[in-house]
Length: 245
Ligand SMILES: C[S@@+](CC[C@H](N)C(=O)[O-])C[C@H]1O[C@@H](n2cnc3c(N)ncnc32)[C@H](O)[C@@H]1O
Image (tube, rainbow, N blue to C red):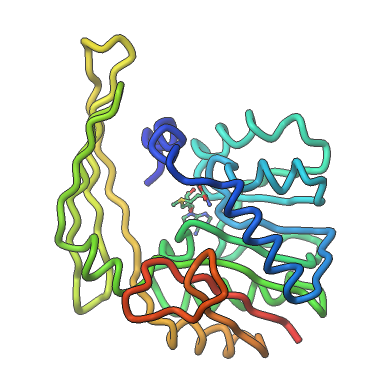
């Protein structure tokens, strides 16, 4: 996962407005009267959200598991003295510090395929939060992975990238497998092909809430992403906010 794709990731995500995403996170802080200083961002990828957090002078620690993604994040973030980049796994990360806020965006949580591992992740987040800490993350909804992108094929023809995306949804395991094939060119004539397989687990809202509670979180809110409305049966991205106390 995220090897060659890492180098095309920002090109392919250019329709995602990370500044708006950052503003939504700030709105969540304000809504719940939080003024975090130390923030941890898990699965920061190429640092698209981290850039805005760093620019706003929060003290940010961010990590990802993929070296390829981190190498791109590093180029974006090296100008910020208040940003620290690490390579860690969400499931068993250890940082010798506690945070006011932990964040993870763009369905990174769906990459944890096993419920026990997700519980371990949530418990780990809980243990890295200060007493009045807040945990904010989003998921691709069960509906989106099963009904919208599962068992579907997408293809896109961009300036220097042609790619296909073939998805299979395993109903027994609730796992969506993405078979990605990229053809990339620098000169418009010679194309290099590479393939990657990604897997995301489809979780229902109640499953996530149950695991957060088991991990110790007391109050939990679920929203249709980028709003403060409750999710409905066709919400595709769901944003969770969980509070330690
Ligand atoms: C869809 S990308 C999102 C990246 C970034 N948050 C963004 O908004 O662009 C998912 C990211 O999760 C990372 N990831 C997946 N499983 C992980 C794990 N167990 N620990 C740390 N990072 C992980 C991948 O390497 C990848 O960078």
